[in-house]
Image (cartoon, rainbow, N blue to C red; front, side, top):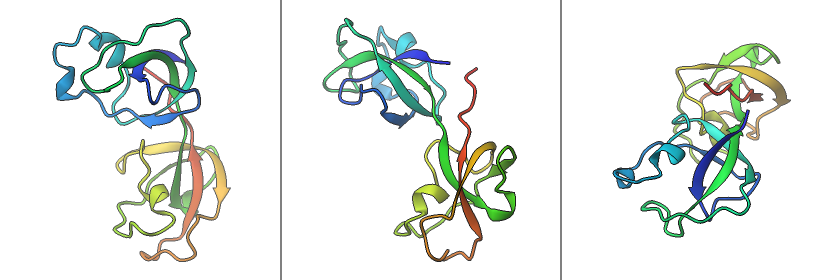
Length: 150
């Protein structure tokens, strides 16, 4: 289900994905707080549409202002333990990885997913991008289903 929010004009394009970071100190006193701070902190979203014929509003966070967009929760790609990698099942992320140069690092520590939660696997994508896990984990790349909005 899509939701209308405000986002910086530089990011306001259909298909753009972002992780909502929550309120900034610069948001204090803003008259648009209700329209802008209406997403779930830490969740990944995809812009599904930019509202036409809307004005660009001034913003203390975004230097070129903000525009109204429609967003919906987006799925998250992640590496999970191979023994848990079944479509429809729930799995969590294995834990932090210090090897930031690894081609799988973005999937071992994906933005928009937390280590202490489990997510429903929508699709098993297969082998992760790395040839060898430096932590000797047996991993499979999956796509977690986008969560339902409250």
